Image (cartoon, rainbow, N blue to C red; front, top):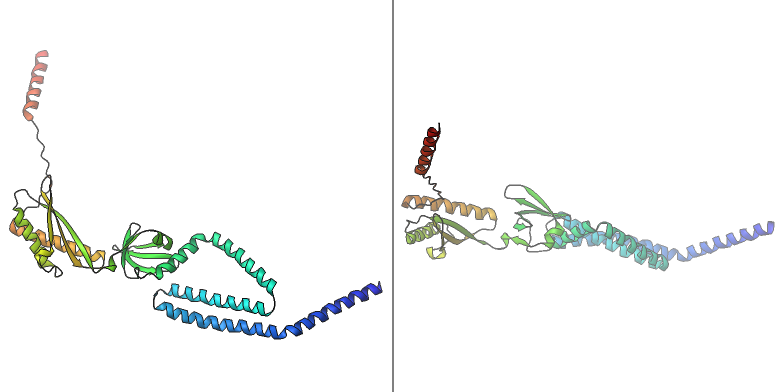
Length: 302
């Protein structure tokens, strides 16, 4: 029993001595690994700030800039960790760490599939020059001013001051109309005049009103005017002209101004804008005769 105890104690001492020798031999590597981690930490902070400055030239959203700088900082720290493990000759630990990170990353990706999709969509939208904060856009049935683009959603403010929050993935997968990309918009104005109207006079008067009302319309020739159909109660026409505008609100205001001025001109010249009229005709003579005959028949029977 005593010999077994001495043997076990000797083995333990040999193990401890071996570990101590290994620690002594690897002290330089351990110190170097610590220095690598410290250097990677400060390098991550510096690179993160540098990336944030570079990204600020293209992106104005603070949430997007902070997210990109943090991701870059995490990547730099991860590289420093892998280098430190390599310095310590922990190749097996490094392989196990990479394998575990892959499995965990796959599980997180499956669990947060929708969130990650919105995050990457937000990053893509932030780098798109054709979609900027302040633009007036129309997408997925909503129209308004772009208020914010973050890592989760796309925020619009509609003309009635309502806020619409749309997931970034939906914006990226659907068509989007950006009114702010062009400095001009076309106004379409439809109306009708009475059949008794002088059509040539209506055409000339309408074009003159548009040309004098809007500074963007240089001459009468810039206004398009077409009669479209013989309607039920009026002869209908389509008038088109261009204005300088970048939002739907400006377009609606211009159309309102055009309607007011055209109505004033028509009233002054006596041009009628008719509305549908339905005439009901009742043949009372038949009813009266029918009623009188029925009454006389009833009296005779009595």
